[in-house]
Length: 262
Image (cartoon, rainbow, N blue to C red; front, top):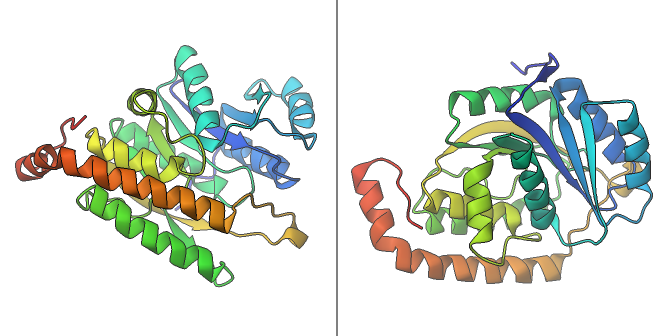
C-alpha cells in the first residue's frame, strides 16, 4: 500500500529537474511536497516563466528549494548540479522525478523507505503503463532495456529509462565525474548501467506512469530522431565499456556479491 503520510528526512530529498515544463510542474511540486520534505527543483535554463513562479512559491515554503540554472544543459547536468548542492548540504540520497506529472508522488514514501533499508542500493521504478501509453515509446524502451540488461550481464535492472528512482549520491557523482556523457537524455540509462558496474545493486518497485496529451497540459521534449541517435551512441559506448570490464564483472557474478568494476 502506498504511503500517503507526509514525511521528512535529513538524509533523503526529492530532486526534480525541470526544463520549460508547462503548468504540470506546479501540480508535480505540490504533490511531491504533500508526501515529502524537502523537495528541491532544478530549473535548467527554463524560459517559460516557471522559475519565477516557483521561486515565489518557495518564499512561503521552507521545505521547497528552487535552484535556477541560466542555460539549458540537459537532465543529467541538472541532476548532477542538484546532487552536488544536496551533498554539500549533508544529504546522502536523492529521489529523482520528472516535472511533467508522469511520476507517482504518492509512492515517494515507499521508495524512500526502501532506500532507508538498503542505503547502498539504487531504488528503481518499474513502470506500469496505462492503456493509453504511446506504443512507440513503450516498444522503444523495451529495446533499450534489453541492451541495458546485456551491458550489466542481467544484473537486475527491470527498466533503464524510468526516471522515478532513488540514487545514493556519492557513487553517482563519482561515476559522472569520471566521464563527459550522461548529461542529457542519455542520463537515466547510463546512470543505472554505470552504477551496476560500480557495484551498486538495483532494487525494483512497480510504479504507475502517465502520459499527458498536450490538451491536458502535457509537455514532451523527446525528439524521436535526435534522442534515438543519442541512445544508439550511448549503447555503443556502453557495450565497448562492458567488453573491457567483462573479466571483473564475470568474477563478481561468480562470487555472488557486488564489488567495484571501475
